[in-house]
Picture 1: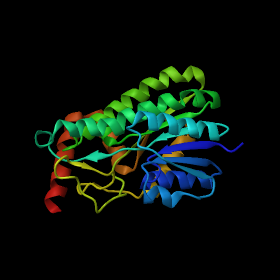
Picture 2: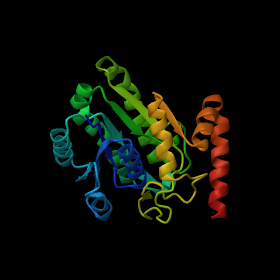
Picture 3: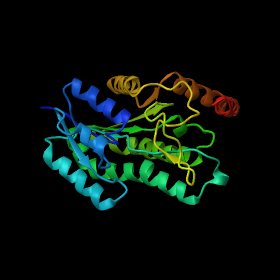
Picture 4: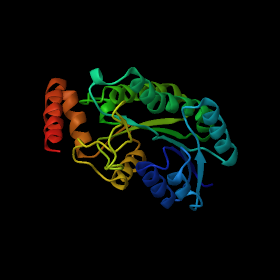
Length: 260
């Protein structure tokens, strides 16, 4: 039986890369994203279905998840990839920025996890949350983004213990900088921006390279998958010396911003 993976944010760079590499392995992928040309471009792809949905609208989310479950013999993997980023000092941004980032990065993932919970239990499947270096360490000028990713990691780490008796796995991938929208900057009023568009990114990697690392980590049964050299170094340094990590992070990002 062909296994099925659901990919939220499936029309974006990392979502497309994960979908393509899974389909190359024989999987079927159901891509969930906002309606638009990027999602339409994936329509008709072999072993793939597309589902236009605003994940911050509860009725749309529940209806879309139910449609996918009804259409597939099993749900074996759900990849929580949908998200937005944010750039700017906390003092300069409105409270609405925090709320918007959390609605997409955290609450949409939680609501999807609830919707797919029975199907994943039935299949003995896996939740795969796409977090970030900001999910386990502070990140300069990313207060809303880092907070949402910390919350995402806290939720899925806790869910792991609850779902283990049901034979369901939970993995968290933590990329550093993935260059998916390099020419798009933050909105001036809110600081909100698309993932992969940060001008202060360090050692950015391609979506295809990131997807290979994530799926390799999943194959090896890793609970936590640092994605890329920067993520591995940040994970180690933050564990050994959080103060040193913060100093180095500020130095590198401020230096990169000044050179831009």
